[in-house]
Image (cartoon, rainbow, N blue to C red):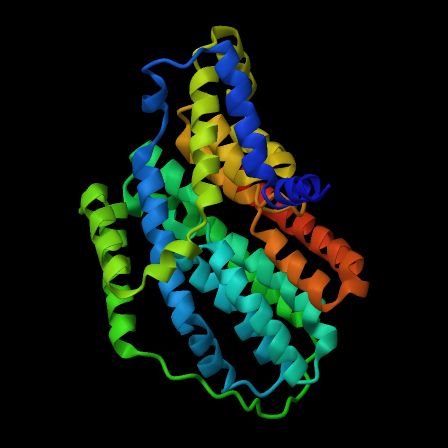
Amino acid sequence: MKLLHTIKKYIKQETVLVFSIILAVISSFIVHPDDKYISYIDWNTIMLLFCLMTVMAGFKQLGVFRVIGMKLLSHTKNTRQLSLVLIFLPFVLSMFITNDVSLITFVPFAIIVLKMADKEKLIIPIVTLQTIAANLGSMLMPMGNPQNLYLYASSHMHFSDFIALMLPYTLISALCLFLSLLLIKRKQITKLDIEAPHINKKYILLFCVEFILCLLSVADVLDIRILTIIIIVITIIFNRSLFKQVDYSLLLTFIAFFVFIGNMGRITEFKNFIENILNGHEVLVSILSSQIISNVPTALLLSGFTDNWNLLIIGTNIGGLGTLIASMASLISYKQIAKELPDNKMKYLGIFTLCNIIMLLILMFAHSLLT
């Protein structure tokens, strides 16, 4: 019984990974394993994800992002300014540190700060907007979220072209988030007594250098194999515990989906069927698929059947809005609310879904105007 409970718990925690492995195994019975299997896997994406996750784990362990938040909050005087900082911190930083790291850092931080300011009533709307902000801010940069990193690498797009593609949607998102602050009543707050912890500057410099090397690799200036060796060696020397904080389940999910997509791409009937559905409808199909299986698996799945990378990038990023699982990062916020406000988790889910649908419709309308 204990083993069964453990298995159920693991499946619940790692649903996407288990789903991807099942698909890979089923597809292997249709297309039997051969020497082509190894070519399915985009090892460059796997290595780059590993390097970025290791570096972000270092920054998070140091508390760098919380210190930034504390410094900004020390200048806030009312609830609207407080909300502005709490919402735009994940929006801006998710462009560089990924949406999930941003939410893991700033959602608990926001809850603590709002309780300190005696503004618990703002927790649900603020966390809702933080989640939307992190998912939308992350779409500007290739390293903002896993699907962007993969699609960027697969498309061989220039760094500047990627930013130019997603910049209009990011600016529209920023404007909508800013306007949403008007719904929050401006009330004075007492000065927040937040003392920023001391951070070892030597380690900050080290992680900054590592992050710059990651950016050089994203821009195809530094070979990903060299970057991976550098990151591994530095981590072994200075902080081996960071290896434990890497999201290996995400890496395994990518590998399993690569196997599934590779196999399905060798089945002519299936390949033609998916290509016909996608042709001319990449954005809509990406959005609808993301609502069911989330945007990272959607990007991996559909990328094997279309070369219209721009529309796939737009669709999977916009598709992160909508249902709670449209972007798996959104579950981070929900779990925090369920933990801190268990009696209000359904209220949060309702507000979250409504706000996401409104934002999704706005960006879909914007896309229709931009194309």
